[in-house]
Length: 114
Length: 109
Image 1 (cartoon, rainbow over the protein chains, first blue to last red):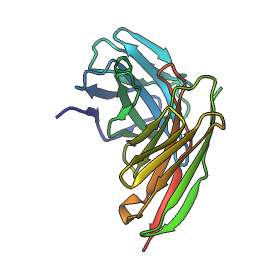
Image 2: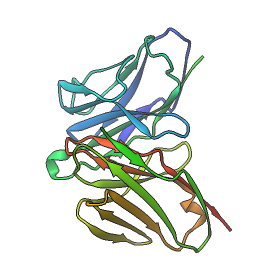
Image 3: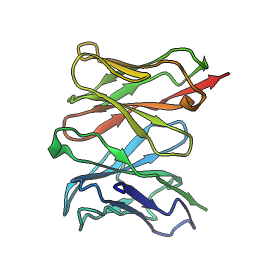
Image 4: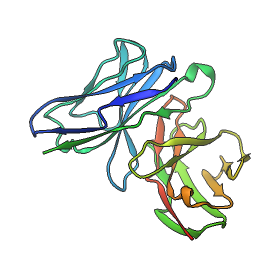
């Protein structure tokens, strides 16, 4: 089945540790995105990538890093510099080259920093 | 800059019709998306409007007025499973979406 996978679903880390969240898609989409969602808030864009080996900062990139070495994969690292990392993290992908930029989401990773 | 505004919560009865409004101000615009998000889950795509007018898809319809920066999502024949948050998102034309905070719809028997 085609889709977007994120793992793990729940993640716990101690304060001061870096953590990497996985996002994989087999939809052959060119563009991939990372969002953060806090309770009662909309989705906020962290980083996005429109093509392999290229990515851009979103609205809240500070304290995060990404890589895009393969079309299928767009991992997000939450570094110790992120002041308030506990949140629900959502990965999405889209295929703008096909005339629509509808984004499709993975199931999300809920990160709790203790 | 981007500004997407939605009401925060509404309650409606099973079988009723509910309209969820969204106003937007974006520096560029390439369409308006609606997503449904159940608690603790990922958003799922409902509809996309890029031209003015109404798009109907089963029990859900979405309307766009580009000149007014306004959209609404219409849910008909409400079912209990429609209890969810409905997110409005505007595309800026550079493959980026700006999301509103979501409108929580609670369906009661």
